[in-house]
Amino acid sequence: MLASIDAGTAPGHADDTGPLQSLYILRNGLPVFAKTFARSENSGPDTQMLVSGFLTALTSFLKDMKDYGEMKSLVTSNNFRFTFYQAESLLFVTCTDGRMDEIMVERLLRNVSMKFLKAYSTHLNASNMVNTKHFAGFDSILQRELLSRDLRRVAGPASPAVMKQPVPRLLMPASDARQVFHLSDELCNLVMKYIDGKTDIDTIAKLSGLDAGRIGADVRHLAKLGIVEI
Image (cartoon, rainbow, N blue to C red; front, side, top):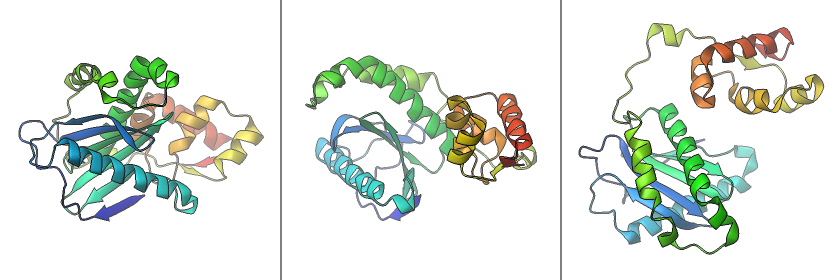
């Protein structure tokens, strides 16, 4: 779901930090970790708390509104995008400007969430209390993650070859297909999850982290079973 708001406290434009503006990790409505990459007058602790509270409240509201689906991103009038990713009890949120590719953002959030949970899952399971000092060491882990990725790259227009990629469409609900054909968890969670009649095979590969050739083979298999139309 894509929403639009007028964010009076949106982060300022990045200087040399690229399109990634900020990262928030929330638990039970409280910021566990917050990092601002762009220089802005509105980047202090009070603003971080306000943004954290707003994002958590908004996400909780939309979770209750199940008929509208899960909220994945929100765009402000200044073209800043907040992207949401839920992992266990934590909500990971990035703020980026319009230059950063959405697929790159989603992959970044998945990688960041895995690293954070690997580093702090024991502490998180031991207590429901939130003390940001316990997670301050994640800053260095995050910096290494960012250095390993080309986040400054601005995605250009899609090439004709990309635009012509097959776009699979489900012919039956995924839950029914899983039950009838006894499909594997990996196939359902990493492939069928992204088959929506709008997303092409290359994009599904990027979202799932799998090879495009592997996705193509899986989609052809599903097509033979009559589950998917290409």
